[in-house]
Length: 139
Ligand SMILES: [Zn+2]
Ligand SMILES: [Zn+2]
Image (cartoon, rainbow, N blue to C red; front, top):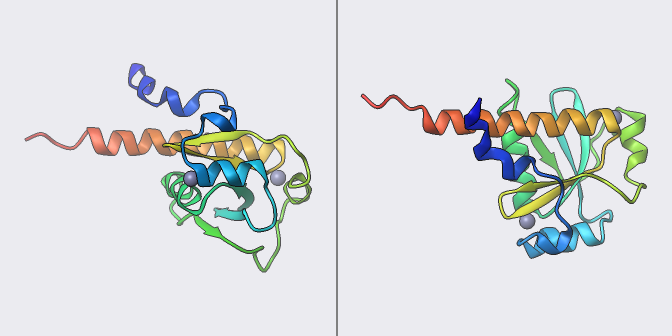
C-alpha cells in the first residue's frame, strides 16, 4: 500500500502548537475551555474535541467517511451527555493527542480507547477520500 505515503503528514506525531498554522486552532489548543470544546458525534461515540470551528468541521467530515451515518459536531454538550465515563472525565486531563487537520489541528479529549478509535477513523477517512478523488474513471 505505497499510496498511503501521501497521507503520512496526517499520521505523523502531534506537532507542537507553534507548528500549527491556523491561529484559531492554536488559540483553542493553548487554552482549552468550555468555549472551545465541542462534541463529535459519530456512530455511538460522543468524543470531546478542541480546535477552531472550521477544522473541527473538517475533522468531522473525514471521520464521517467511515460511517453510513453522518458525523456531526455539537458546540454544546449533547442532551444525553457523553456516554463513556472515561471520555467524560478526560476533558480534565492536560495531555491529549493532537491530530493535524490540513493547516490546523484538533485535540481529541477522549479516553484512550476512544481516542484510538477516532484517530483510526480519521486516517481511514483520509484514505477513503484519497481513493475517491484519485481513482475516478479516466475513460
Ligand atoms: Zn483551525
Ligand atoms: Zn471513552
